[in-house]
Length: 260
Image: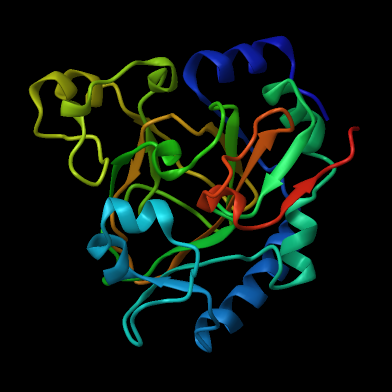
């Protein structure tokens, strides 16, 4: 499968692209079955809800041990899922999406397991909002040619924490004043407010995916429903984009995928 010219231009212009009903529903259910076991038994490495807010910019930039620093609390994400189960690995090496990623990156595709490579959760009544941010802020690469693939494993909507994006923000230049001490895009800063008003979102169904640029501003509300919202996200880069020596970005394996 390949993108048509209109779809490719849409991604390049807005920084994200939604592909409906892309993943097989049975594969989504198989992923969910494994996820539920790992959540039930709290299999490390994991990140708990409280850790998301407590850790500093320096910690997030340099962390290599992804095991939780807390022994209780709601799970926000399962980390390092590529090596957890063959089901997860197979999705991240999916051949159907590979030609699309090659188009977007204009390069051979490499999975970077140091970043994302996660099952993201928003648990009922226990989750918190995810503030406006760029994923690239704590990553160390020679350029920004990285994108993430977000797979909805169930319905995602305004009540349970759907992703919101600021279109075209991946191509904008920002000053340090527009971000807080943890590199979140400030919603109380006058210069940011008009831009935030341009945000967009859409309801996702099981099997829908979003591909979005590493510099695109995005956020999500907390889950106000009685059911968990569970999603799968991983990041890829172009082969010519290099992780910086000595950084967290090079601390975990990179998976070079064959060209299609």
